[in-house]
Image (cartoon, rainbow, N blue to C red):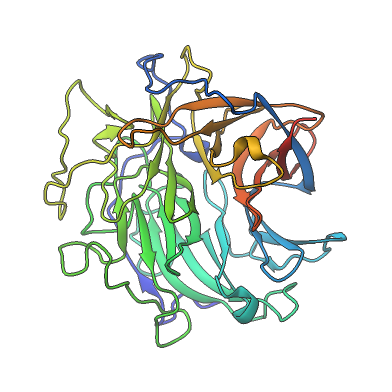
Length: 425
């Protein structure tokens, strides 16, 4: 591949502080108590669900995509491989192998994958991965994040050689808080979650310098050459101070985003005290690094409006879901939120319309939240136990197929894999 191609868009950023932790976890604080909002028991939701193994034998699965024209699934591992699973099992050769290009360690790796809405016709897929520092990346930065397109063969089982086209490069100051998820919205545009790039409060409240701490929206079909992109005319910072790629900002580490009936859900990993899920609005500012969930990040008082470069007093948006870090007297607590999907499966009607998600430290549980009658209230959220022979020791990500069934990606005691969430039997 040629990352110095003139077709790429390259955006630099300012360095931010450092912290540690997988999926953006940080030091726990005793300030988190049981005062998180919203009840943690919801009537009519199941107490338990089961997991049906679809694929096992994987290492660190982070994303799944379902082919629209066949019984085929694509599963991305953090090390850079994308596998093909069909009705007769996992193919021996991967669809794509980027292990010589992708850098791992910390929270780096192949972090996102999605199929183009017209995949059945154009065979295009998009990936978001970490690679070595590229020309133009600031000297003190850790690596470069790359958003690229590839083209699969007609049978959808291999990527065509030399088909990579770099869409966007994002210099990353640290090897954690990189975000990385990708999804196409109902408008046909590509949305990408970009982490703030470090701990200690950095990122999120400057829309003029870089794309860190954001959800961006671009048109990957609008360029005059393969790999180029254009900006949707109604992006919120068009004709306003700030980078036009922005769609929403004020995030710490958006770990997984999804769409349902026009709604865009973005889970954002907190630092010391609270985890959150947001329902995204165009031009919304979700508070980091001034707020963590509905709470002040530092100090007892904090403003309800932004004051960073280019933000013009934008009012902070509260999350729809928040929960505390331990210790907490709630059945929903954890250290790093894993964003999920709204369940729409006929085979699991008890979860119809519920947003199903989890936490890196969930220990064999999933979470489910339901929309309240009052849109200004936090969504009631409860924990659902995983019953049966298959349980998760580590949760990494989620997916949803065309029938609305939700899948978990993670590790059991023996293997990593893809698991369909089903009724408990």
